[in-house]
Image (cartoon, rainbow, N blue to C red; front, side, top):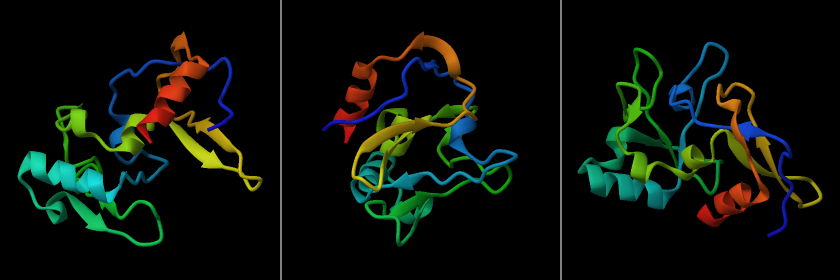
Length: 136
């Protein structure tokens, strides 16, 4: 698959957990594929409806992760750490990047400036984005 990606961007996860929930300026939706929800349910011995709610119109996503009421964070975030990290959804693995398709059908990676790790760490190469694509 051919794609465009941001050149000269640096990124290092600072483990701040900002990506795991709402911020002062943004309501975040952690979307789940059916297979991701099933995998999490099996590993945690929880029913899908305990941690996610059904959504429509967001194909291929069919669920969104529930959040805690007191701070709007993912229900699997405890002490600023993801308790399902090895099972985390694709959308979490991509953050702070997302893949969009242009009107002409081209694939482009974009990133959000709200992530504190943008501008930190090493400069990302095309291989980094190719590895993200392999997750698809």
